Picture 1: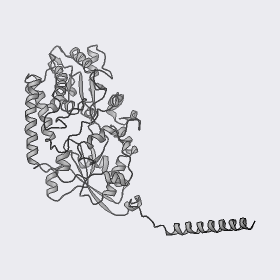
Picture 2: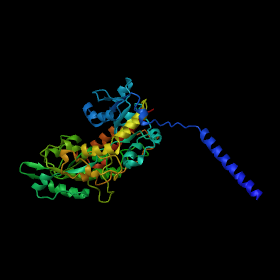
Picture 3: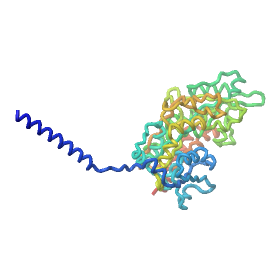
Picture 4: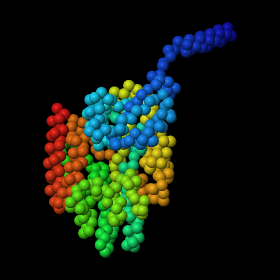
Amino acid sequence: MKAAKNMVGSLVVLTLLGSTLAACSKEAAPTVKSNVPSEADLLKEPVTLVFKSQFDDSMEKFNERYGDRIRAKFPNVTVKFLPREKDLDIRELVAAGTNPDIMYGNTSQIDQFLVETGLAYDMTELIKKYNYDLNRFEPALLDNLKNVSAPGMLYGLPMPWAGAQIMYYNKALFDRFGVPYPKDGMTWDEVYELAKKMTRVNGDETYRGFSSFISAVLRDNQLSLPYLDPKADKMADNEKWKRLFTNLSRFYEITGNNRDTKNRSQNTESQAFEKGNVAMQINQFNKFPTFPPNLEWDMVSMPVFADGPKVGSQAASNYWFITKTNQHKDISFQIIKYLLSDELQLEAAKSDATLPSLKKGSVNLEVLGQNVPALKGKHTQAVYYYAPAPAMPRREPNLPGADPNVLKTTMEEAFNRVVIDKLDVNSALREASDKFDKAAAEKKNSSK
């Protein structure tokens, strides 16, 4: 009995001792201060941030889309925007001591715009710091940027985009000739047969069945085929390029649908549809604002290869970048987070007719363009009928590559050689391949 009392007493002492030690432990635990500033802290300090676009955005356009929203949400931030000046590019600005803090542009000129200027910054540390969920974005959009960022780095975050390719059609021409309208899910072969039907001469007027924005169709192709081989400084898969050329060039071999032999401009071909005598055109979704009010048009999904993946064009997105020289990276990241929020992306889908950069299914895409008068009654579902094609494969990091714009214009001229100069596809691609080799050599020499 005595032993039992002693045991109970010992347990009481141990329990009290344990409680005391725990309390002491709690009191003694050091306070770990988070290195993540609160929103309140970020809104205290007056900050000036300089924005720069890769494009010809005016001050008014920037303020309407971004500047005014930023000022309202972050009243402590003074927003300055640098419009593009004639004969003064970003490299000259940086050389003169003007370093933007936040920039936006696409991947095609990322070398000149971001990397060669020394402004490229890996946003991974901010993404980790704020536990930002990258899984909310459409994977192809992230992959596009990862593949042109330095290995293991991510230079930016994807903006809403309007560069998805679709097929416009002229309703009035189809009605006039009694031909059923195109529909979603058509193959390139089906569109080719339809183009032959719709190419005709009626009196003094020639009606073309088909045109395209050749630059985009080749660059953002559905095969995810890059200009350069991912593992060598030479043209990528020749047979796949041959397939792309052969598929598209056959439309321009239809009698009456030929390109103007005196005009080699891809932009002129892109503008052909809005004149009213072209039945169908492959172009980017953001082309429709140029159409005249009296043009009766609608759209369907981009055609696909019968034996290929059922995907749209590659995602031609733009990206927000924080620069390496930015002294206010935390609040800059919060601004970009805000601009890429579900709320603002949904608003942009309604009013600006841009596709959210978010993963499909996370927002209601049926609202696309609902506040845009030119899209009233239009079949906007065509824009997201297919998922975008996967990103092009990443190049080996030790390969300098070549100027993307040189490669792009070289491939466009090779296509002109086929459809205007009537050169065979193999010879045209061989000429382009030689120019690719030269462009890669020039890049290699300039990077030494």
